[in-house]
Image (cartoon, rainbow, N blue to C red; front, side, top):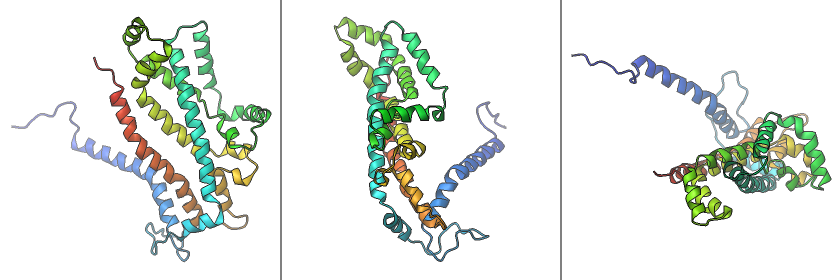
Length: 282
């Protein structure tokens, strides 16, 4: 007897189409990364721009990575990027947590106005505020400093809204019970709010690090001293005035990309663990 297929069971054609689309997305997303990795491992005698591209290097070598370190102070630039990312992460974790909790759980005059102004700032593109941000940073005496690079990204309005949403999802009964027990605002934030938003904090940490590490335009505007350049800005020296070695550029790109992979691979475990532990059990 032929067994009927339920509505939720895909047909073989639908299953094949899904896998085909997944392979297409995988090719579009991972393909450029693998090509850059392959280019960075190719020797000087291999043709990168051949009519018939060779994906696998004939003579793989890590000399290109060593030449990057000889061409530019890559470790100094990487340390500068880490400092900028650390300041941005600290500012977002502390500032967005306090602001998000205040907007979600505290009642004060003008809360709707403040929330509306935060939403309005998301409409403006970043390029529209570059001039005003630079004037502010220069007036504070932070031009050509790593603190000046990290300052605009140390408090993201989008992260504030994310934290507000996370705190708003915490059942108000928990807050009321803590309030009856005599807990003040700080105690309610520390013992009730934060344990339930650790998953969102992990998301903010990951994306703040990626944004600070990959930023190119703002550090290029603020910094003048080459010794203070971040990694993304310092990699421009790999592109010569009259010639460019695509192998060195690919190696530099991989050096800048690998820390993001490492951070995401390490933090995603804490992200899912935080979401599970932060769930409110009924």
